[in-house]
Length: 307
Ligand SMILES: *[C@@H]1O[C@H](CO)[C@@H](O)[C@H](O)[C@H]1NC(C)=O
Ligand SMILES: *[C@@H]1O[C@H](CO)[C@@H](O)[C@H](O)[C@H]1NC(C)=O
Ligand SMILES: *[C@@H]1O[C@H](CO)[C@@H](O)[C@H](O)[C@H]1NC(C)=O
Image (cartoon, rainbow, N blue to C red; front, side, top):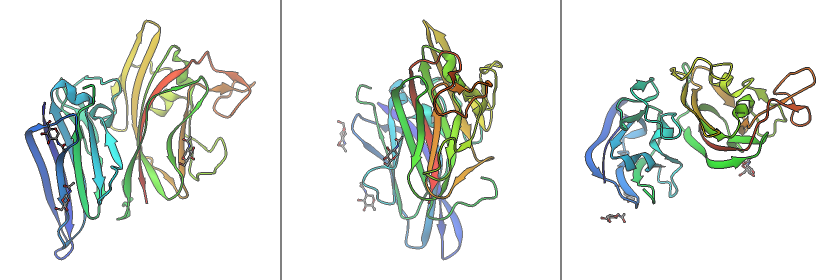
């Protein structure tokens, strides 16, 4: 199978203090069930850093299940591995198009996925592709920052379980973006609130980040206005079929970054609890469930800059 792919990047040349652009644009590039190299770029001696700025890919349907890996500064294990649909904030391989934000989108009916998250490196960057085996505004990132992708893939959670979507034990950084895809026999998982622990050992409830799942994604009342793709948030997929609810959404945090100083946990809940006054998000246990949340299957991406 073949794909078409574009990666754009720039490097800082220290001698001249100039930013130079480099890219790889491959048409009909082979991609196999084994891992195949797309780009291997080492900075020249007069360059101090580089940044990947743009990723775009299209190809045959099997591409949707292919993984792409970024090896930063000679890593033997890639620190970033993703599939294209979740890279642009759409779960369940939702092919709805065209739509786009400054961060990501999809400009063709079939594939045409793109993303503009900046991936910094200091020495080298290597990008590979592999088919699935079955098929902040005024803030400047420190020069040693890394973009880390933390994932949950099709994991089953019981009703009211806490789902840790980002788990960074030490260090400083901020949350850039989060995409959640859930399927469940009950829509009441949507009552689940988000909590940010901006120090790893901070106790419950940490910092409350939303009063429900759809509220976190800037909607309300079970997304009663339907699907949308805003610059900072989107409700990308919904299906209610044969007793199963499927939902996916994305949220960008560049306008409202969640900084942390000593490790970080970002936690969603599969449904939530009410106290006797009917107040939600403040009980770890006890109280009364909001509605009747059920087991849910969760896929999540959390993109976190760390340094
Ligand atoms: C991957 O598989 C292809 C096709 O079978 C083969 O040509 C290529 O050499 C393999 N690459 C690696 C790195 O094993
Ligand atoms: C990538 O390129 C560098 C520098 O040219 C080379 O040393 C390295 O072996 C290459 N990596 C792979 C996996 O081919
Ligand atoms: C978070 O990571 C730490 C260190 O790897 C691990 O001990 C802990 O169990 C993880 N927490 C969750 C909820 O996955």
